Length: 282
Image (cartoon, rainbow, N blue to C red; front, side):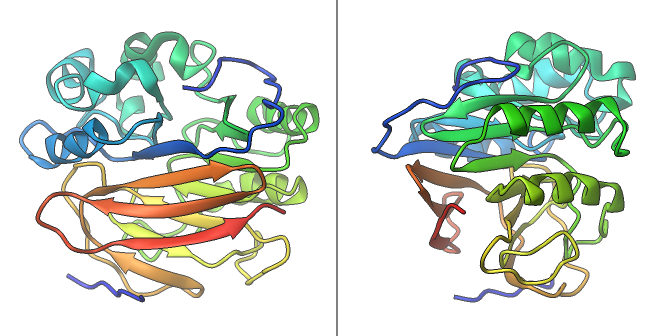
C-alpha cells in the first residue's frame, strides 16, 4: 500500500447565514461508508458516537447498489444511528439504483429536494453546498444554474462544497474532469473548502485554483475523505500539491468559526495517523 504522511443545519433552497456566530460549530463525516461484510462503518460510527455536531456524508453511503436493503442492512445499523443530524451527499453507488430512489427515500428531506441531489444549508456561520456528480455538470445544466444562483443569493464569508467524485486525486480512479465546472464556479465566488469521496483513502491538497495551481490567496483547500468504512484503496502515486496521503478508516472533523476553520482527521481505534491544521476564509 502506497501512502505518504507529512507531518444539522436548516433546510433551505437559498438559506441565510446565521449572523453573529463566534463559537465553533462542529462538522464531521466521510464518504464511502457502509459495506455489510466490512467492519469499517461500525468503527467509524463509533467515532461519531463521541463527536457532537452536524454529520456530513460524501457519497457512496450504502454498498454496493444503494438499494433499500443496502441502506437497511449496512448503513442504518451503523451510521444510521446519527441519521437525525446527518446531511448526505449521493455517490455513484446510490445511482446503481435507478434515480437513486432508495437514497432519497431513506434520508427524506435531509437530502434536499426529492430527486435532485443538490441543495444547501448552514452550519454555524458557514454556508454548505452539497452537489451531485452523478447528473449533468455542463455549464448550462440545471445544477450549474442552481449553483450560480445559490452562491449569488448566499454571499457568505465562508463556504464549503461537498460532492463525491474529486477533480484532484492521487487515488486509482483518477480525476473526474466534469467537476472542473464546479471548481470554477465556486472559485469565482470565493468558496473556501471542497470535500470529496470516491477514492477510499484520505488526502489533503494545498489551496488550488481550478487548473490545479497553488493559490494561497483565493485557492480552495480540498480534502478526499473516502474513509467511512468501505474497503480501502492504494494510492496510484502523488498528484502535484498533495500535502498528506494515508489509507486508513476515519472521519474528518471540521471546527467552523466566523472567518476561519480547523481540520482534524480522526482515525478509528487502533490507528495512530492524524492530520490537523487551520485556515482562514477568503
